[in-house]
Image (cartoon, rainbow, N blue to C red):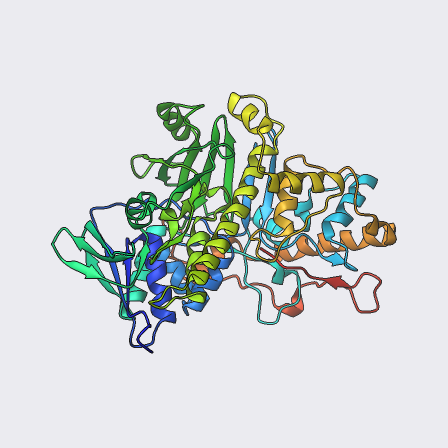
Length: 540
């Protein structure tokens, strides 16, 4: 500690972003000197529809020391093994974007290159048949890998579906136990210093709360980052034309699926996210191609169960703040930017922003080099995710509505066009270390939506065709065998202990069906002596 150490951090806004930040900072700034205050108003609602996540959320919870079974019970969470896309590449088509890997790379050659050559020789199943997560999801199965497991069950990578409001409450209890002070109230005034830094905020109660570092978690409004500091916004509507969403929760029959479903509609897409106590549903659409009333009717006509609440309408502009960190204000969540939740990245943006802030945590001098590096990293993350989401719209054969005609024929960012061109030629994908989505993700969407390479990499031809074919079939059968041995997704959650508010019929739990023991699960018979010794890449 010295005279430059920040002693007061003020978080403006609660919800998922605010309480994730409060929880993480209370854990990693636990020095006895830094005070954390969070201001939120019960009168101000949160968007609260982001209920699906990607695997890095596991790391966030683990860093906080959160017990996964406690988390499942308190948030009504279910497991997510990937996303099923319906009618995106073309009508009456579907494909699966899994977490984890497609098969195993052989002798330094990417699995999808082996698959591309093999499908030129014979009719092949969809590439998802070589994903442990996709095969388990297709059968409604889930299980945890035992410590040290080396079988295909180790490749069962997952994330969660959960109630975002309950997650915020869960983290609030965590943060308050660690000394975070919550102040109820609405901010009515923001005081700035001569250099533009925020000095204090004033509440309706006239209470004035000062600080040295302010986190803006005020949502789309951007109370500090935009209304006060006039940071500016980069609008990406030319590539992502959807600007509206309608959300409604429903009841649903049966056990929850271990995956999210995204169904393309005439002017957007519909999400389906199963929790223990309800189904999260919503329609993301473009107001240029569909009216609000038509969108609401479309959503309500395509629900599986009875609505549990009135539909909520949300307006947004896809893009990002020109700077996520401006002066002494760091924007997190919706105040930093928004990309529609097609690939469930909204909560990851919060998590990533928090992690980078901790890594580059400033002192009272606010060195510009730290701020600039933070902004560079957040810009690269947003643009990386933007390109991957735009890919889903661009890579379609649909021409049945004006919306899909527009998406299919629109120009895309040069960074994305380069990736598409490289993949279309020989299936090549090059990733920078900081990119969020792995090769598996790009392959799943490209092949699932008809971007099929004209050729494969020449390196594949150095491998014996028959031996590769045998290895691929061995992998496929192993994934099937392991999936068949796993408990159902519902049974697994019941064995962990379901949420007390889970929907009727989900509890009480039946006798648990444990995942297979390591010695009962078939493993790939690749050995060091085999000409096809397996190597493993990095998942999402």
